[in-house]
Figure (cartoon, rainbow over the protein chains, first blue to last red):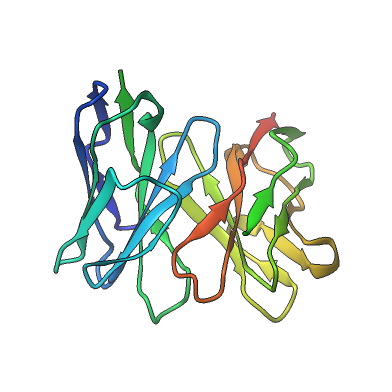
Length: 114
Length: 114
């Protein structure tokens, strides 16, 4: 049990819709990152938030956006959903300034786009 | 750009046998290296990590990994596999100062025969 919780666990959307995924970081963690894991692939880094600002982004288009709140919870928003967005979305939190790169992952949200 | 290759998509071993999972990375300097395990429906759990120092790293659940700079490898080993080790294993590389941006391999699915 990592203390990182994600909601919902499963979600079905249709192409063109918008979706919001939520993450609650482990207590004491001030950095959150999001990863996309397509079927049969390793996770791919989407972006990272530190002190409520985006602080690093992977190769994802602007329709992937995020928020980090003062209580260190976080949201991932995806607009104009495409079929290829179907994947497991993982949230990971860490304490920047502590043990570097020690990430704690949630169990993920499985998004299906029809 | 950093990259990770896990050449074995599937590996099957008998319970009690030894295990070695291969990982090769591409990075210009000494990277941060990680092994994660993912069970079905679960997030990623960190097994071990290498940042610097001793090239043989001990992790949880009896796993170890050895960093070999000359071969750009970070192979994961376990002397005696248990049935509960069946899962998917991911090798990942991160850049010092790169925050939570990790690049993962495509994973190796481990099956344990009783």
